Length: 376
Image (cartoon, rainbow, N blue to C red; front, side, top):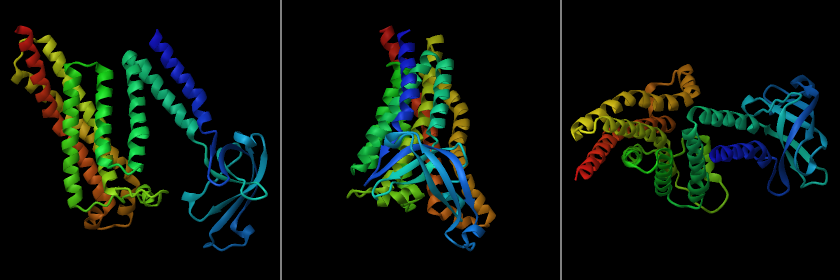
């Protein structure tokens, strides 16, 4: 009963507090981000109305009436311009009733307001709440533990890993520390501190670290730069005097990205072997190891596909571009971004494959060692 009350309190805090957390974000030099709503599209000017050519930077202009719904200017209405260019990727094309983020500029005599983005966080919170509700409905006590471990994982990454890297600490070293924290706490909370969880912890960390070492060696040899995306390139221009190790950040990402799938496989094997040991107490270490390998081999086929498909799914637009422009295969596979994704995906799959015999060996030894102690 107490656990249910705690979870309900957490959900209430998320529902009530999370939207307010983004309500009024102070910016730099008089710039403040607030929530707003589009009340009316007063006019929509086309290129012919603006008297511009097709190649002009601004192609359309919306005259929009917006209302601020948070912060110091809550309730005030503004009539603003929303310029649309020839690149739809950067356009924020609004309509009446849209919830948006507004930037209020108070650096001039007259307050300037412009639309910076759509307000999407409420929908993110909604799907997160649905996910948490399903965890609790299906998993019950295990679901509560899953919510707790999810919070620990997010906290470790956002409050320990990321700040440490920004301060200039070695990304690979801190990601190893983060991996240990996440693995130990997650598996211990979910299954308790016992032979099963200890076997899964050791199998997970062994598989992940070996896979990370292989990725580091191969990636270094392939001269991966870490500049494989727009976000990575932006790291070169963040404020401060810290020089970030972009290649180290890349390998830290590979290590953390591999962790979840490997943890899943290791726990599945360790849990299965523990159940087998409970049912057949006189099973030999060799037989138990073979059973663990059989379970692992069944899991391996689907989990490696899961990891590969996850990375491939994120790269579908890029693959379509290459196909449409008929880029030669030899050029595609030698691009930094493609080589990075291939090494990232295969390194993760290596971690899964290695975790199977490692977890099976560790678990069989621990289960049979415990039986010898019981008999002694």
